[in-house]
Picture 1 (cartoon, rainbow over the protein chains, first blue to last red):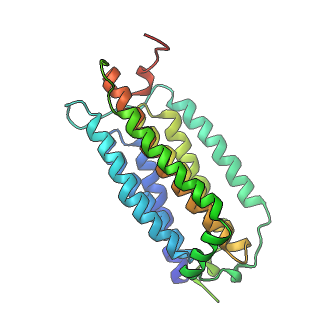
Picture 2 (cartoon, rainbow over the protein chains, first blue to last red; picture 1 turned 90 degrees about the horizontal axis):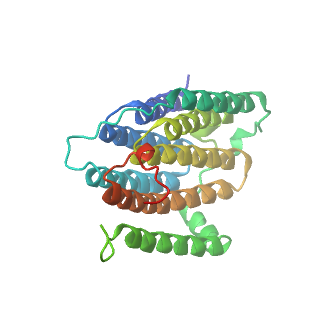
Picture 3 (cartoon, each protein chain N blue to C red; picture 1 turned 180 degrees about the vertical axis):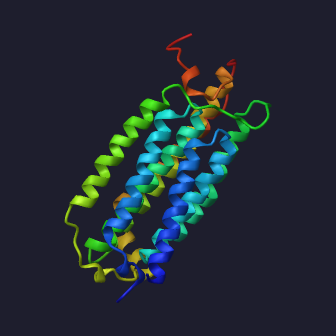
Amino acid sequence: MTIAEIVFYLLAIAAIVSAIGTVTVPNVVHAALFLIISLLAVAGFYILLSSEFLALTQVLVYGGAVATIILFGLMLTRGGAALPVVSAGGQWPAGLLAAGVVMVGLLTAVLDSDWPRDVNQVTLVPIDQIGRVLFRDWLLPFEVASIVLLVALIGAVVISSAEEGEA
Amino acid sequence: METAAAQIPLQSFLFVSAVIFSIGLYGVLSRRNAVQILMSVELMLNAVALNFVAFGAYTDPNFFRGLIFAVFVIIVAAAEVGLALGIILRVFRNRATANVDEVDALRW
């Protein structure tokens, strides 16, 4: 077993266990912390796939911004009570069944298909190449994404700010 | 260039991605708290991005398309989190609950 395989299995265990923790623990704050662990483990996968740029983006955006926003939302919606402990809804058996069916289907498709084996073509991508491609070949989607972010930001401010005369 | 990923088959990444996606789906279907549902959606989006990067790394010799797609997935996920938490805060202010099964009035 090579070092890469050991790292992969450790990351896989961390990602899957913390993902299960995210959706099963009753304490919402603990769920958010599990989510951060899972997202950081996925960042480790990105490093294994030799795309360091994406791993850094993942840590910055998810580990920093998204985690902060989610914890902020938890803090603002707990309503002065203690830590929010929310039991699972009554439909969790149906959810488990549906998710199980989807997982069996996906895993069957993954394991039964013939994937390309030319794995030696995985190459390290220099970050300046990413910048060139992003601003030359993908310029229009990039600009549209910036507009999407702007609209989402303004929309979030408008939606969450109270209007006059409203409860 | 020989890299670390060359020793791990593509299936392994797809396997982990499928498992995380299914866990996220279970969370979306079974949780009551809207913030927890949002976290489960983040798990699903992350699994999809991991899929994109793995496919890009193994099948696209230039390696860029999967990576660029993953970047856009992260962008959309960030926009979605901000917007969804604005909506959740608004619902919480009006209804004093963040549980989706208690927000069932079509009008009042």
